[in-house]
Length: 333
Image 1 (spheres, rainbow, N blue to C red):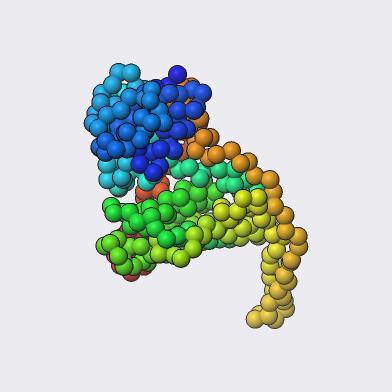
Image 2 (cartoon, rainbow, N blue to C red):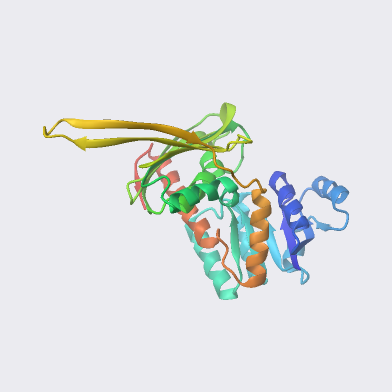
């Protein structure tokens, strides 16, 4: 039985505690939060879980095997480092760290201590993303052309990071999983309106295999949209994460271009076939993710979203931040 200490009992921390608590291979031993009111709320639902306003109580505890860090990003590095130095495996909320240097240090420390780091890139454990990966692997989509995502809503405003660092890690981790090419350059533009951080941003990623990805993230949208378009040579796909029944729709549509005898003439043919909605596993992604973490720690496996996965996302976010400062100038990785 893996004994878990959770640091942070805010919006996402409540979900982390719930899933670790009900996982067959783990038990939440302690929850730490600096806000006594949040711990009082926890005690009403989980009276058997120990609580503390000092996170070091969990980190130093000999009764705890792993620490889940569910706190603001600027605290991730210090908390994860202290946990690792005290022999604890680490599960850390996205984004992994504030910069690549911090990520590298944590990865090296975990390897030296023979401990696991897992970054909470939840979407990689959804039935939808796994189904898309299946379509890529079996050739259904064919050669990929583009990835286009709109991830917008009204809030939730963050006070320590901009909208890119808040919402873009979802798509960057998904692209890291789905697109086989390596990101070569990144361009980002955005604007600050309310609290000193960019609340609207646009990010473009150029991959080595000629795939181009575009992400629109926004805290100032009147509607919530979670839609991704993936274009392939054979078929095209629309993933609407807000849909209940048909999250993925695959379209047998495409374009074929053939040169004619004249140099400047092109023969263009359009294909418009059927649309179909494949069945997608509806198991809660966080439930799958938590079970995967427990299995990896208990059986010596490497997590799918390990520290290296988290580092690759941080590298892209750092490049995006530099591009933002220069109004979209391409930053090469």
